[in-house]
Length: 373
Image (cartoon, rainbow, N blue to C red; front, side, top):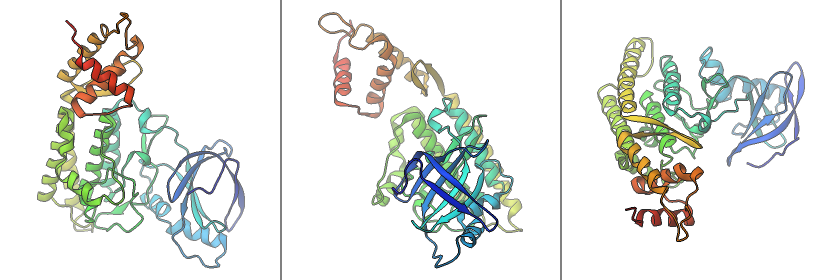
């Protein structure tokens, strides 16, 4: 979708009044949506998301259509349905732009993405706390990925897209899931009814992706390939950390087979909450075991990353050898300020087969072939 530009004005119309909104900065866009920061309205920082319209409004009045959307548009409907759930951004209103046939949603602007959050362990724990509170209310998020999660100034983690939220036992319908989301669980890829285990699997995928930056990307026509890869998760076995995540995901799947989530109703609510508590108790224990196996290495100018003790020692060895990695003139090939960053790239190439630009790849191979006696 490419329909707007900075400074574009549009009028939001209700049954009682109307006011003008002005686009300030493009934040993201996909084939069917655009997200813009709005020029401030008083003390509020707001964002507007435009999405392709899927309703047939005919010749209805804009004010009436906007009133309808406040109650029936999935994102806004779910926002009101969840009530005082604190794990979501605040929605203010939604409307319809008839001239370009798109729906818009105005919500609070939350500037910080997950990449800006250094402590990955704490970040993932906050996300788990968030979805636990959702699951305890008998709902699932279903479309968890980095694009739809933000970090507030106070450190709280919130979801900014609620279109796929469902009550336990309800089925997904076309359009609920973002086609570019590579973190969907195996169960959702197979078009099964979603449950809490799917959200947990997606968050663990996210953890692996944030730490390693090596999670596979899939195209829309690669569904069967994605299913095959996620059945075994063999790609995670290249590191101790990845192997731990793989074992946890496969263990959660086994637990699900023995403890399926029943469809929500008044007679199943107690059992559902028992399962939710049991699952998160196991998850919390296993999650801490994973963290126990790794040290957080704080390195200047390099994003905080998690390694095992042995991996950490290997990186230190690379850093030491880079001090004597010199050209024929005796000059350092890698400047001191780039030493740790380059050592991490060497580590990633050796352990996970990572590739970089042609010049960097050549330098890494030259370094690995060098003798440091």
